[in-house]
Length: 369
Image 1 (spheres, one colour):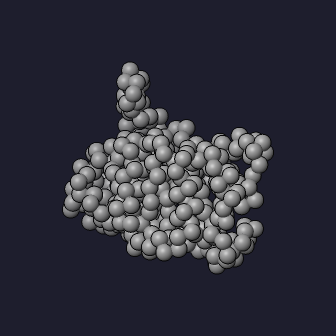
Image 2: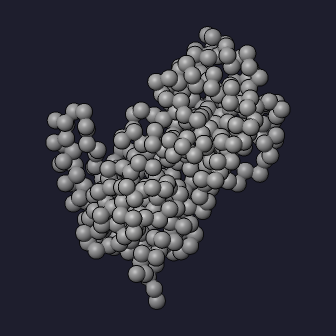
Image 3: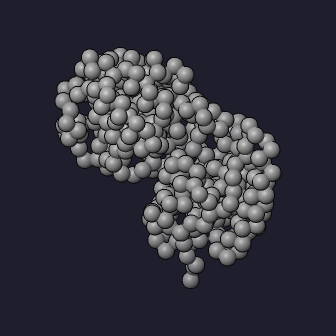
């Protein structure tokens, strides 16, 4: 009798790593319900709460990323890497995985590296169009590398690459409302255009300030705005809006619970350019204005955004220029039906559906060479 599949999934640090990891795990369980899946993450990071909430066991490593600005702090980082490698070896010996999956982020480094050295096949999933340092190092020993963008052979061995796309939250694809119904549910007029503004799971200071700096422009327009501020900024923004006055055509929230309905209502999306956000926009065929965060390693988000901009599937406003340009650009674009359709159609052409299932099948294949 065959043993149940045993899989280690490692990585995390941000929602952009955790959502794909959970999607892949769920897809594996859908294909093999008796599979045993163990997550390995970084102590104190987001995955240590999100993964158990999704029903999976996780073990945290005392791993940290290198501080590239303050090099003297890396003495402790080297110690943490050494300790994490020892812990990873013990975890692997105890759990005895048949395959290990890395989704990026420095937490995946010790686990995938140790798994490969112990003869366990490894698969890595790279969400961004510009490969991260950890995945570039792990690629040498990986059996399969699943990517979301074309042209990734400049980072990885061509014969290992498989274009799969990024897994996205399945609920986003299951909205039953029409656009008019979703807009009406928000309390808006379905005849007028709707712009959805999101700054990532934690919000984005620059995008928020762009809105606050242009409240009068918004009030004077016929465009309707849904604005997710992020919890960190919400109370301060509420106070400022109480002082300045909140336009009737601006709905403000710290977090959108029904993102599927918000996407369905939106004619245009303003967003950071994280890998998960980009994949969602493409899969849903949404025209967008992307404002890449300047505070991410290797400037990943600008590379992600340009992958769409170069295909005429999005517009780009740089972070340094957003406070003056973002809202005027959004107002102009929201009134241009032809451009909205072109951008949305081109984005949809880049979407890769069923990514989680495709990757899960590749994971299972690695256990049967």
